[in-house]
Length: 285
Image (cartoon, rainbow, N blue to C red; front, side):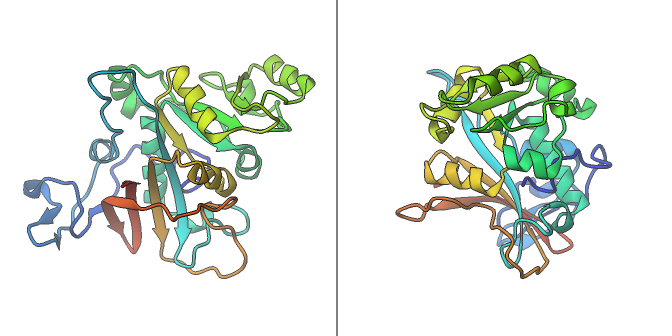
């Protein structure tokens, strides 16, 4: 589940009350942010500043562009990635504003089929506030949605397939059922093979998207898909909203599935705060 779920953020065009946080804020001192010694400065962040703070790394001057895979998730204090099967109850309006910003910066949003079904995914829409930025970066008007599915058991009558601004991709394996592949293609989706078997191989998925020209990758989960990316060692960055809520219960964590032999260390890049919500950004060490 992405930060706040699959819908576009209500009121996402406004400036949010997001604050630079102690020791890691990226705001210049004159405008607010962090003073020497790590003191917190409270100020508003607009959409342009959020876009700058969450900008993808600049590509290397030499060599072909390399895909950068970023995840965006939300978790409660006790580790729940959802409540009653959805992430919206543990989110906030500012979380959704950051969610919308991260989408607006991405070439493609990678999401698992189960999350598409649970969260009611819709096509990404063009955002006027980011139109110039996307054009300057050589991007289309909106990010492509790429659905990871082994079975292709999807409702192809949904707007995600019938009326996207840009065609929806489906990442699947070479052994996927031919009739389901044909149904997907007839519905207007583009099927991309990213595995030798039935399922998708995470590293192959990243590579396949890069070969299509998509290098700014964003995944919004769900937890099993994120866990597969983590286990494969292909996740470059995690944007995690920590919600100041406790839910108990048996909700999923933000990442599930296979474990890694040695825990992977990520470095804190930035941290913002609003009303107890922490908006963190970590990158591979």
